[in-house]
Every structure is written in C-alpha cells, then in structure tokens.
Image 1 (cartoon, one colour):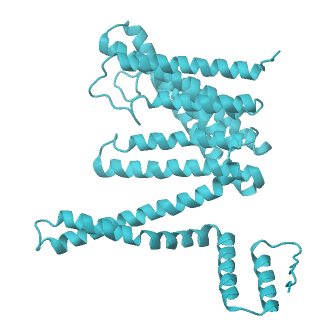
Image 2 (image 1 turned 90 degrees about the horizontal axis):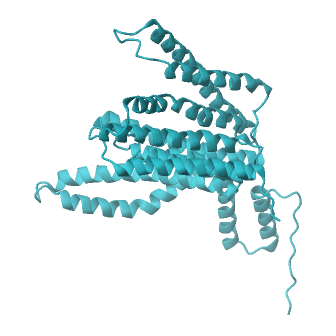
Image 3 (image 1 turned 135 degrees about the vertical axis):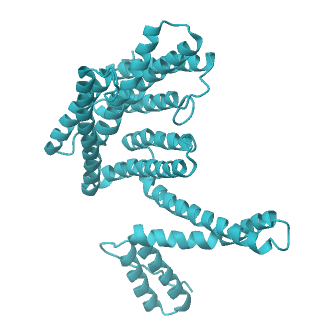
Length: 396
C-alpha cells in the first residue's frame, strides 16, 4: 500500500488550486472584450504564466525538500497569490466592460489587486533571497533584517490597502493622510529589507564553496539576465517613449529566476553553470560587438555607395552581412580568449600551458626533455600530489 506524504498532499492541493484560478482567469480573459486603452506589462496573460511557473517549481521543491521554506514561498507567494491577482483582475475588467456584476464586487476586485502585489514581491523577492539556498538565514545577525522585512510587508500592505484616496487629492481625509504615511514607512522598511536580502546573497556567495556556491551562481546568472534586460527595457522607453516596447522580453527574463532557483535546489545539471556563464558572457559580448559593427558598416557603405546607386541601401546591407559573417569566427575567438583571461584565469593559464607543451612536443625528440616538459605541464594544469611516468620498452 502506497502511503502519500502530507507535504505531497498539501503541495498538490495548493498547485491544483493555483491551476484552477489560472484557468478561471484565462476563461475570463478569452470570453470578453478588453478596453482598447488597456496597457499591461509583459504580455497579455503574463500573470497566468508566472503563476504556473512559480507554482510548478515551488511544488517540486516542496515535495522533494519539504523542510526548505523556499518551495512553499514560491508555491504560495509566487504561485497562489499571483493566480488570485490574475483572476480578480480579469474578473474586474470583464465585469466593467460587460456590466455583468455589481459595482461593489468590481470595486472589491480592483481593491484586492491593488495591494496583493506587496506580499507577493515580499515573499518571493525578499525572503527567498534571505533563505536561499539552504532555507535558513545566513547567520543570527540576519534575524533582524528578516523581522524588519516582515514588519515592512505588513505595514506597507496595511497602509496601501486602507488608503481610501490619494493624500494630494483636495478631498483627502485625515485617515487617508495617515494611511499614506503608514505606507511610506512600510515601503521604506520594505526597500531596506530588499537591499539587505541582496547583501545577504552576496556575502553568502563570497563565503560559499562547493555545491552551495554553484547554487548561488545559478540565481546570480538569472538575476544578471533580469538586470541586463531591464536596463535595455528602460533604454528603449527613454528612446521611444513606448512603455510596452520590450516589456515582453523583460517578463520572460523574469521567469528565469524561479527556474534557476528550482534547478539550483533540485541540483539538476548543477555543475554545468560555469560553462553556461562563460558562454553567456561570450555570446552577449559578441552580439553587442557584431551589432555595432553591422550598423557601422551599413552606415559607411550607404554613404560610399550613394553616388553610385540609388540610396545604396540594398548593397550596403548585403555588404555588411558578408563582412559580419567574415569576422564572426575571429571576433568570437578573441572574445572567448578575453573572457577566459579575465574571469577564468586558471582555465586560461592551463590552456596556454597545454598549447606551449604541444608546440614543444612537435619540435622535441629527446625523451628526457619530453618527460620533464610533461611533468611541468601536468603540475601547472592539474597540480597532482605525485606524478609518475611509465614508458613501455620497445619490443624488437
């Protein structure tokens, strides 16, 4: 007889509830028209995708590591609460457009989604960082930041949820002003806790070794990707003024964080992270260099070909494409060498040692000299405790 463990039952029930809420919100999204002036960060239905990803990863961690609170934080904070916000948002939008619900219910739904984001971000963005990857704080001194974070989440949620009107409204009441002050205090504690959580991750990484260091690298890579894409997103907004342009890429990059947390804690292909980081840095740098070269060559060729052909646009694009294709491999090797030299110095030195040894072997015929070179190369690259060389006698 198979015995079902309580964590499996609880995680399954929470994940099933999240799935039902996501399906309900998706039905409301698909069943009615949306306001023409409506703008949503990411893409339509992003909250549903985020809730499903968080719930799936959180449920896996909760089942395999029930004592680690990170799984439950992802499952409840990132999955269940996000799904609740998703379904209430589209219920309110659908009811507003179609007029199929009472005003009180619609106002209640809009009010709920106005403040629920605070505990979502707090549970996933602060406590997950404070507890990752072991599920415990980095030390006793981090108990105070954890308590400050909890107080900040509660105070900010209370102030924002009970704020009846904006304080700068002419009809603002003293209660509204008090609630705004409460929210400001809670937001300050919230921001300080978030900075503390990031600091905790950095200090953990500096002190970590072995498996824990590899786990932290996964989340650091996902966080760096989010920061990079968010920076490009802000740049696009500054140039074009279009808030929606590039928001889908930012949303997809954000989904890499729970996936990285799941991979790190479940330890699936954990030790491939160094190669992944290396290739990410190389190809990101290569993409920037080649894109800049492509644009520059296009502009130069357009100016050179303008007197010969009408505009010169087609020939400029074709010539730029051929030029970029020709320099791809040399630039890639140069960038790879630079990244290895800067970030993976020991690996770079070992590779250079092997290259020097290979060149020496091609030109050396003395057996004693080859033996000494082989010993020196092995000590420089793998640093063995002892080394012995066995040579088979020639059989006549």
